[in-house]
Length: 286
Ligand code: PAF
Image (cartoon, rainbow, N blue to C red; front, side):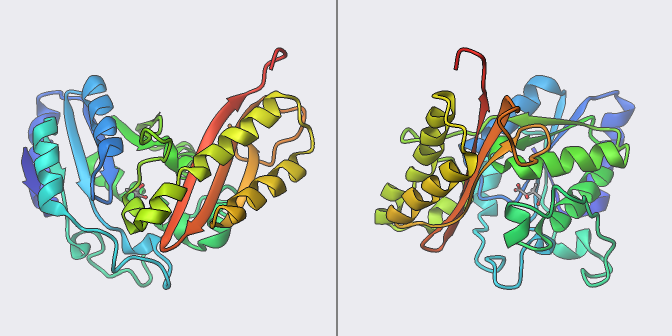
């Protein structure tokens, strides 16, 4: 596996691959890789002839009170995992390579509406930081496809919208969430949990499952269901940010006429801000 830490090193490999007509997939990450990331790499390998993984803890997407400084950075271990997985190139640039003119005053990509709600409401500027760095990585790597986990479902839709609005020549692929045996979605932030909190953490997923069961059984008062779900999380020791029933295609608030739903939740548990979501299609039989 090639390691590129500068744009020049990245470009050298890309030139060779483009000349050889290779199909390139990009898996953007912030590192501290786990099975969920490796699943993205595996999917990318099935769809492309060359897989580039980026590891970049992007300062633009962290708020001033958030965990940018303490975010786990495990480059050597990540490199070994990617090598074993058979990735072709790891792009792990320092901040100056991505933001050579600094972050202040940097052009920002704003994806309206969808960025302002749910996680965007509690993390102002977060999705603009994500869209900006993903746009930049797409321009640097120029892949035919890029893969993102569905665990960050809102992020996936923000990126899809950005790519559609800016006519970026890349296909965006969402990959289902990888879970622990007890249902907890894999996340680099799970390592912030104490042993006791780790035992409580799957309650987030179970609450979404409870919500899905209620909807399948015909419960129609969405606001009441959301409130009840938040109350369950609070009882389990979480500080819920939101539990919300949305339309899967655009994350607009769902109503009884909608059938393709996404159930989303975010909650603080100790030092960890956990997010999760579930897709649900309501059929006449459900
Ligand atoms: O999901 C992530 O790890 C990050 O938000 C991403 C897409 C790599 C952008 O920094």
